Length: 232
Picture 1 (cartoon, rainbow, N blue to C red):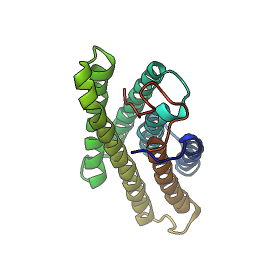
Picture 2: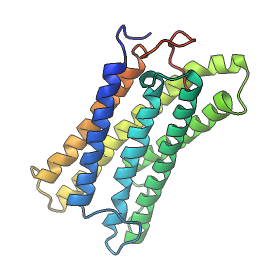
Picture 3: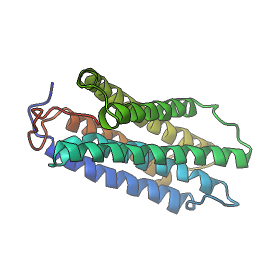
Picture 4: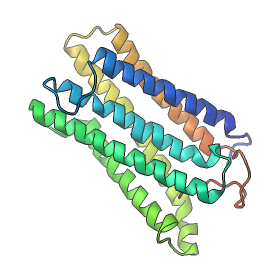
């Protein structure tokens, strides 16, 4: 069931919120946390890669991949490729972001996979990868039978949105976890940085809400399949 409104305004708001969220996380990690680096004496610079890539990859680019069917007035075959590529890029960035967190922990003598955020994160990236691989072989190449695609499509959509919602929820959990660590180390609870982190998390959640609203709204242009949302 789709909302009786066009997706266009929701997609526009989504794009704007994505840019705002990305700017905010870059201000946090570069201005307040000292920058980004893969190799550094200050291991915190390695960790800073993690929130940037996870937000940019799984949340922003992943969200743009989800709404690409509703925001782009292109042929379905073209949108299918865009959807596939964007999700592939999101997955790759997410994997590198997780590697950065492990690298930071290993070089800082911090235990891995001890928090709920890390457990859910590993689950999300694993499910995201499985979803991408299944979508690739079923809807793209070599492609399943017509019956398999027809049966798989609604489950592909539901499963994809579920994984995305989990990713967004876990990102909020990650912001909370990091901010809690910083505040326990002396960061002012009502300071500028604390407010920035909280508003970044809120902006991320609102972005995800508009992504979902875009998905359940009418496409910008009707397609041969009567405008139904189609995953890859």
